[in-house]
Length: 336
Image 1 (cartoon, one colour):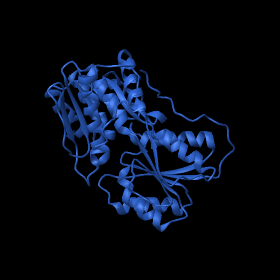
Image 2 (tube, rainbow, N blue to C red):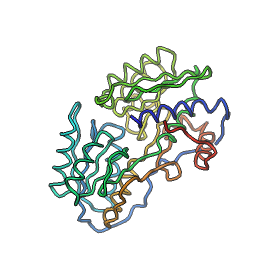
Image 3 (spheres, rainbow, N blue to C red):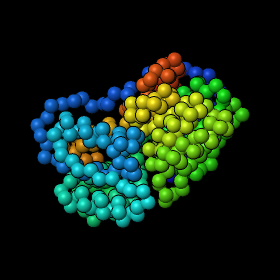
């Protein structure tokens, strides 16, 4: 899958750029964008179809939920939520979207690329309902908005953070789909994918995440980047047991993780799903739907890195320098 391949490639690039660039400047914005407004109650009814894990996954789904909650508080919209289950067929996703739309929820937001086929199909059946899908560009239609992120840019930054912080010159990446990896003599990068498509349970299996991370720590890694949704909770547990560090993904996982493992979370790659969801809903309240792709990158604070816990404060200036070089085009981050 492109998302996980991109994250791994960018992690490698971020870790290895230091062999050529040395380092440079930063802090990251972790504050939701969009001003809070006092608006009258809206008649808009928004449906939200979560990926595996739903609310409480401390990652991707929770970030989408935060955007929905902000829209509810600021804009007065009403909403209905539903979530996926492990191993379900596309037909179950299709039915979830239909039920929401038939109940009068418009727009309907699908969280995650696993909904791609379902959104494409149901949007054709229900042309008067507008759909948004997060993290996917494959579903195409006049009533579909694709909310995507330059996740490779955020992953580059946390890869650089890992390279600056590693004491063993060995870091790890845990994702969801098996793809080729790159390594150099300078920094060893271990890559592990928890499941193969069409099995997406690797994004919600902390036990598998813990086992995979423990193997990486045993093999010499001292920092592991967990781009595996809810499975990251197991990675944090393994890091704690190994006396090592981990990097979270999608949301600021230092703020949502069990306090017992907060100390191991070096940083998180922020994917501002909350910003994208809120912006989409705010536009929807005025009937302003943009069909096609809307991309959130570093220049829009759509991605970034977290500073909670203070463990990257000493390298923030270097990371922000990389950030500015990416925004200016001086550094081109691989997307494959």
